[in-house]
Length: 412
Image (cartoon, rainbow, N blue to C red; front, side, top):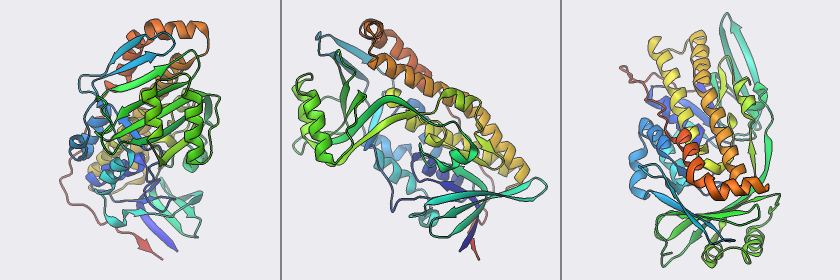
């Protein structure tokens, strides 16, 4: 079977769905290809800082999420070796930690029911020259379907097939890994709406933050650990690792884990120079989200950066279509994608770098790193790095003055 679409997005994660919503707002229907059978929520929860909420405002979905989650205005970092507690103040608007699946569903609700094609595993990409400046991208799926499109956007995560096709730099292992999970207290957990982090002399960093009165998002970031396995095994390893070092309140949170939510993963990132000088687009093909800029979670901005990508890409594509009377003009569309890449390249590289440095400062094993962490990092440097990330407005989407064009798919 062969399909022909104006825009194809590979991946129905945060970046893919947000990009589809942005394009819909500017009158473009996109087909989203997702390899899984349904929306994936690996990672359980994520934190969104003010820059991310500006992007959600532009996408028109923030109003559905804000009433569900109370912002955290501050957090506390406890050094369990010395007993010292440091207060960390977040931006005035606070940060909100929310269920990843709730965000995905809020975005998916904005799209037509046939906009997402599940169980669609991408196996190959082909560039089809049409003569002159015109070109199309063809993606070949595992089930034998071929989908041709005027624009192809890879939002297929850290192991992106589209990024590999573009020739982007391979990912680098940070040397750290993370266990993430949800804890459920049916009668209420009793914690304040604050982020709690714990440190000791090792390279282990656990923490948790409430999602609501009954649920908390918890994590354990460690260096050189492999906790891959069944959920019960992961939970047991976390408890064994933390029992003698960290407070009972954290251990109690881990014991209340919803085992179905547990995951372990190495923390990977794309080197910033691979983003700065890498080929982030080729004609009508580009990438967004983790496919472009996978980063460590130490500043909590991976999801926010993906939302920013969606708005910026939607703005450039929307302006191109508006300027061409509602049509996708290949040469002008390639320029729009190139302008998107230029706008996002340095911002993405900065976020990757800041996140990596934040993680190294919080979990470095050198004596001088630990000294800076305990004496200056949370008091001075963390706030500075966080401001670099969150004081950013990705802009608005253009307003279209014509009705949506017919972007229905064609089958042969």
